[in-house]
Image (cartoon, rainbow, N blue to C red; front, side, top):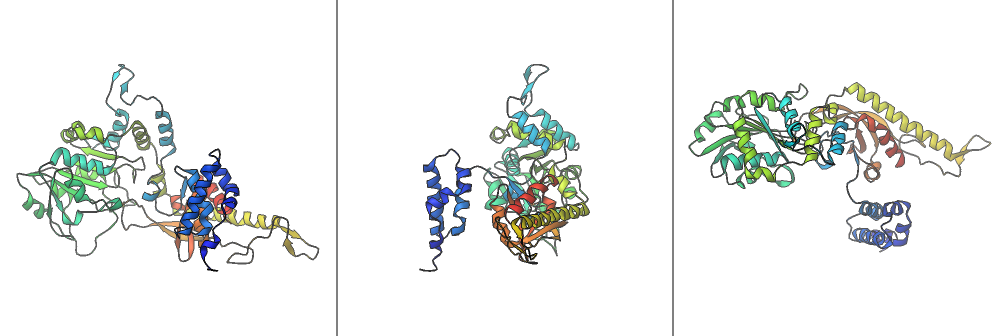
Length: 459
């Protein structure tokens, strides 16, 4: 019983008196704060959190809502962190659209207008190969709408190697079959040829579906029919490019894009708005005017439509350089200069803090003063490990699976991972080789100062 970790659970009054809990509670009242403390203590008793995390869990419960996060993982489109961060232009557009806006109104005629015409116009301009465009609330919704409007009660022909599982355990076959469409699987897991599709097409075939695999890559003895080959078949070809890349990017040579798929003969292309496009969550539908119109006028389209804030953010994203695109194309040498500056500031400030916290005695030896002595960290007495190291970043969000981007990171002691995650803003990095790496490719330059402050607050 002596070593029972439950003995380390802090007392209720001690937690309530903690300045962080007091600040988080605000005007919520003692009863609400106490309930949050008791709940955190119970989680610690059950072993779900460490006793040392009771205060942090209480603060998190009292704070509520979403917490700002600095993404230092090196994953540019991190699904668990909200995927693509919006550009300042998109944030400003959302703020402007929060009130009344002309989302379905033409100020010139004073009459009703096509919903989101400005966003649709920006999307059409960005992909001139599309005859028409439409937007729904995510890429899965785009596929559901296409299957419902075009293939309910009919067949969709798809390669076995493209029967993927998407986020949170949702599987593409289940998603499509829920619309009333039947799936006709062709080929094998690793090799599917255009003749496999041709042999499967019949009177009941609605379209051929080609899906870009998400979060994995098949290598070795493989074969897949191209969009150009599939477009020679006597049925429409629907292509899910997934990541939202609108045009080819030389940094991602194997990543399919919307424009190329349309030029190669795809009748419809679907994509995500919050991945490589760098905008809000949305499902983009582009292609033949007659098919887009059928989808737009289908009753299900009403249930899948996006709100005015999404439309505003999407238009602004299409007319600006979003953070994801800037991070993808940032020069490695620039990242290295930023990293050295961040490390120098962290170590320089730590040195100043130690000097201020130590009293100079007559014999020239620094001794603890009123501020207390700094802790000795690995790498030298009184110093904290903080090193600039080479790193590898990835696109994330299912985009460019297996493709690596050279990057630069700040290496810190691994013990800082948890306190940084619990800070405000939270800083999320990755632990590798026994150290915490803060990869700067996924951190916008304007957040460098906040990153430094967060690190210093934990040391």
